[in-house]
Length: 80
Image 1: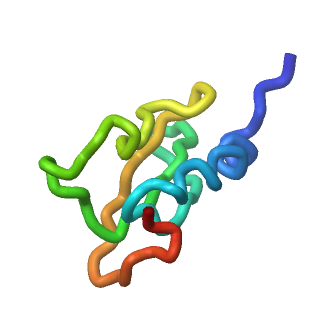
Image 2 (image 1 turned 120 degrees about the vertical axis):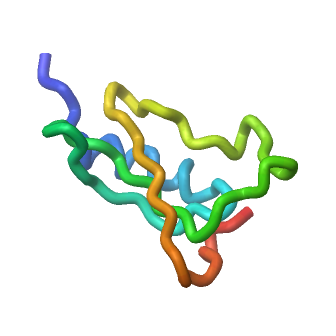
């Protein structure tokens, strides 16, 4: 059985992730020699505003996610 690529998984989950507050884009990266799905956010949600549904999953279909905070980027149009 062939494993789905990291890029394909990122593309599959991109619409879901972009609906989360402050998520501006999704990409692919590498961490410790393994592919990861990078979730770019324009700012962090304050703790008192975070809900379970706002959290980025640690894994998506076997690939680790990595949240990357972008500085000086305007809010995404996908912000909920």
